[in-house]
Length: 349
Image (cartoon, rainbow, N blue to C red; front, top):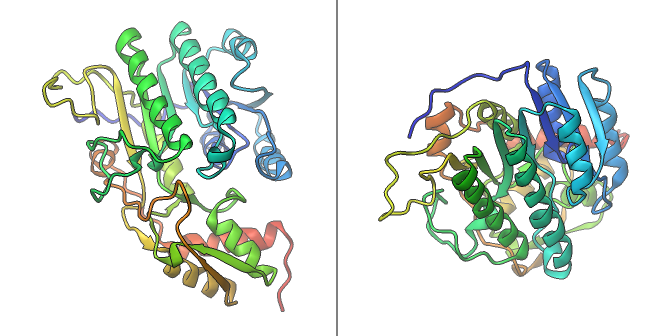
């Protein structure tokens, strides 16, 4: 069901969780540059370099319309205080425990952050009658699905990591609140996000860091994996366009067909991906070109929890908000390498 698209409303209060994270920082920065008021929350956990998170925060804390709150999603009292003291209009929940492989060895962290924490967000969003909850899901929910490209209208009941299962659970929980309480919720299935200020546990960062230091890179599935690499600015543009466009009940939803991509409740999920999967080896070749140095490659089999290919069908995204990610791999990788060299003060002759 096509919506009447509304541009970003700047006089609302946006609550961004995970504001010191890669996507949370990038979104907060964009909203602040647009003149919006942003309340950012983060627990600054040490899953990866806390100094990188603090460096991101330093940039957005320079804006007068930004307020940072150090707290955890599991701390319901701290969250309640935020909602009571601020008239929050729209919530963007990007705080979560990330990482597919980490979830195999540290399951408890995912339950607390991604399930308990998300429940708190839903409850407070419900009681404080927010206009829209936008939250991060993941392409990982497609799990064992082999139908390409991945569509929001496909069944996603076979996740292969606890991380993926927690994101699928978020979608189900959101739908329940949309159905029972009329809370408009939009889930965003991000596809392999990369770019400046990116996470150190992601492939592009790991590869760049290793190549710069003359160390070998680990290339899983012997480089034959394909990923729908999506530049962070494209992700942010998609989120911004959706913020003031909450889903409405689809009165044409057919219970017999049970299309998982929509609902009779004010609920929607979208893929946000580049819609152009790239083989990992080709991605590495682009990186080598931008760095000007060849990588030493350690070829390894596919890891547990990983899928051989991701490929986003973004038809619904294009139809509803008129946007399609369009940053090329060449341009995106070049911008990341430039940022990496600047941030880590690498000097090249």
